Length: 94
Image (cartoon, rainbow, N blue to C red; front, side):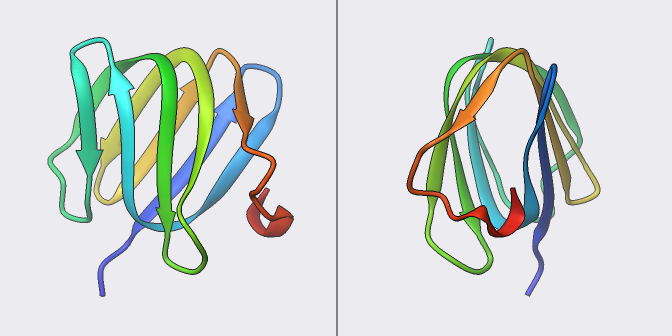
């Protein structure tokens, strides 16, 4: 099964990385959902909720204050001005 390699960093700290089956985010142009095989995208990340469906484990969300969102060859990189994981996320890939 194809998967996404996801990395999320904030301006001053690492947030999360791991394999995911889906990523949802809010960009300045609207909502975007990314699945494996998605076309390359570079977008301005709007403030709001990011949703990650990891390959192993439960879906989780985090709050981001804006930044950039990049997709290329099943790799998603999110560089947020500030981002915070929900308290329910385990420390496995933090």
